[in-house]
Length: 292
Image (cartoon, rainbow, N blue to C red):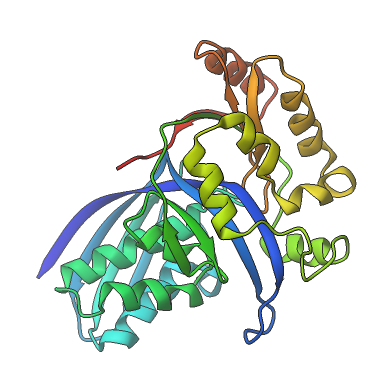
C-alpha cells in the first residue's frame, strides 16, 4: 500500500534566548530559557510511505550524508520505537536557510514525526513523542507541539504555551553561518555560567502579556549576540544598522544565529528594506508570526 502527502513546515524565531548553564545530567547539553514563535516561512516535504519488509529510505532535493541526515534519524527512531517497518521517500523543498537559527531542520523532523504518527494511528502518545524527540534535536519538541508560541526551557523540551501575538518581521541572513556546537563552544569562553542575569519564566510571561514592544526590546535578549563582534562582524554590522534605523521598534538575532530580525513602526518599510538587503546579496524575506 502506497500513501503520499505534502507537508509544509514552519520556521521559528527566538525572540528571547538565555543560556542558564550546563545541564545537570546530560553531558554536553545546556539549559536555556527562550521565547519561541512559529513564523510564516516554510519548507515543504513531499512524503511517500509504502509497506515494506525492510528499511528503505530516499531523500530527494537535498544532498546530505545519511549519517548527518536528521530526517533519516527520525525515520529510524520511529521504526525502532514502534516496531513498524516501512519504506519512506521524501522530496525536500528548502525555503528556510540553513544554520540560520530558524529551526528549519528541526521543523522538518517535527512535522515528519507528526505525519508518521498520524498515518500509523498514533502508536506513540503525543506527549511522549514531544518529550523523546529532544534526542534528535533540542528545537524539535516545540515543532511537535501544537503551540504557536511558548516559553521554552530545559534543553528545549519543557514548553509553557503563551498566547501568540500578531507581528511582522523582516529577516536578514548573511552568508556567515554559526553551527550550533561552535556557537556554544565559543559562548562558554565569553560568558559566566551559571548565568547570573537570567530572567525568570514568570517575568518573561508578564512582559509578554503586557504587549509592550518597547519593553520587549529593552528586556529580551540573545546571549549569542555577545560573540558577534569578534566572530561574525558582518552579522554584527547588520544588527547594529537595524538598531539605529529610525523606523525600527525591535530587532535581534534568532537562535544561535545568524538570522537577524526587525520589527518596524510602518508597514511600508518592510519591502524596501527587504529589497535593499537582497540587492546586497543577503537572504531576506518578510514573515509573520503564526497565531491560533
